Image (cartoon, rainbow, N blue to C red; front, top):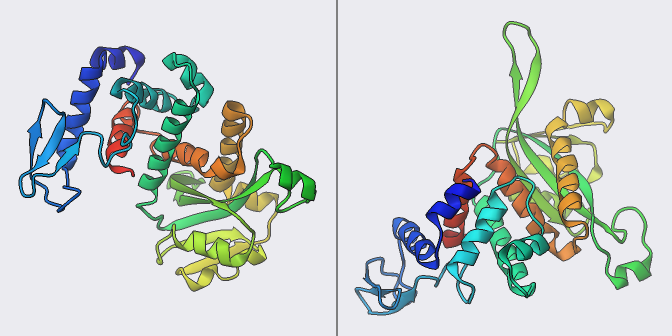
Length: 302
C-alpha cells in the first residue's frame, strides 16, 4: 500500500475504526468472561455484547490497542509507516510524521507492534535444511557494564544473537550451477554463549526432522540430540561463503539496518528491533499486503 491508496482508504478516525472492526469480525471475538464466540454489536458503544452472559467487550479489548488512548487513525498511520519500507523508521521519525509532541506514547505504540510481530513469527518453526550461526550486535552499554570493562564475548556494547535460516539447495539441470534459496528466518537474542541456552533457543525454533549446518563451536555440541542431523564445519572463509551463506548475509543486513536506522539500541530492547527486521524479511514478497497483515497482527498478536 502506497501513501496515496492509504490516504484514500483511511482518511478519518471513523474509516480506520470501521476497517478494524471488519478485520476483527473475520477473525472472531471470544468473550473474556465465558469464552462464548457469538456476540451482538452495539454501535452506540462500539463494543460487542456476549449473547450468552451479556458481558461487553470493547473494540480495542484483547487487541494491541487495549489500554491505549491514541486514536485508531494514529495507530493505522504508524502501521503504515512501519510496513511501507523494508528499512523502517526510527520512533523519533514516526513521532515527527504523526505530528505528536510527546515521544513516550509513540515509543510504546511502536514497541507493542514489534512485540506483536515477534509473537506472530513465534507460532511457526523452521524445517528442512537450516543454516545456523551467531552474530554480535552493537548495543548501548549500561553504566554497570561499562564499569566492569569486559572484553570479547559478554563485553559491554555487544549482544549475542542466534540466527537461523531455512536454506534450500538448488541446482540448474542445464549448467550444473549450484545455488541456494532461502525461505524463512529466526533471530533470538542470547544472554550467554553457554551451550544449554543456545540449544534451548534453537530447539524452540526448529522441527525435529531438520538438518542443521553450523560451524564447530563448542556451544553447538548438543544440537544433534534434538534434530535429525547436525553437520558442523570448521569456521573459515569458504564455510561463510558456501555452507552458511544466507545466515551471514542476514546478520550483515540486520546490523546495517539497525545501525543505519536506530544508531543506539539498548540491549534489553534488541529483540524487539530484530522482531521487526525478521518479520519484514519473512514477508519480503508481500508487497502492499504487508500493511493488511500488520493490522491482523494488531488484533491477534498479543
